[in-house]
Length: 361
Image (cartoon, rainbow, N blue to C red; front, side, top):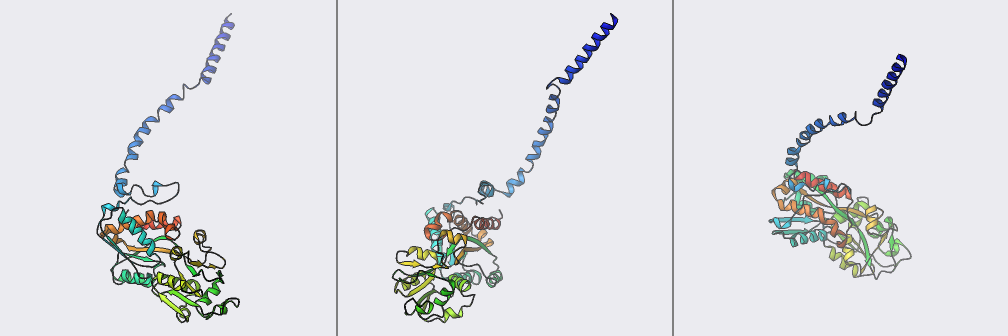
């Protein structure tokens, strides 16, 4: 009987131990509860950076890069043109002029109370006014600034800042009355604007008629670009070519080409875009100038377009900074309609970051 009692006691004890080992949930509760105090103490730690964040990024800067993480776009502080007045003076590229004029009109339409002056005098002349004479707030350019021009800027206390605003395709154009040429190789293009006297000198199948040439002046970034891209930086042959008329006014070149089926000229795509009912743009190396070929670089005469300014000018004249901000923010809404092509997102983002750095943001 005593052994039976001991055996029953042993069985009961073993069962109790087995039940305690299998008991669910009861034992983990305290550990999940204990982390609560550390979670509460970590809140002040997350609050401590708030004051520095607020001072380094005022309310107006809130929409920057983090506002569009999905696309990777950099956003600038929103600008209300009606809050600004004063003068904005820009000069430079005839190629950039139609786009700059469009953006200035929009800035004024949205309430800017000041005046905007934009002169079409060529990229080189624009850099002279900006870097030598110090007369302008913004220099427009269809080529990058040269080292000598940067040195000139620095000599008068200006540090030029580059803002990429778009892409141009240099258009080689003939009249629609020209029925014999639709495409040129780059080698033929060089001949047409230099050593060839007649069209038949380039291709015996073409008319034995003198080539009439209409080209931008030497102050033009378009001229500089053509010399670099087509003539290996040697400008002497094109300057010495017969039957050549030069002008800084692209509209004069358009009219010259329209005057004869044997005329040929080159200028920014926007001027062809305006006159495509009367002109034909030639393919180069078999590639026609358009949005896709310019952006991809397939068209061999695609080139970047720029604005240049200076951080001190932008801080001393808030209206200049506001206009550049507005330009960079809205340019892609207008650029195709004017006749140019958008810069890559990477290039436009870099321009926006340059603006933010200039303004200490």
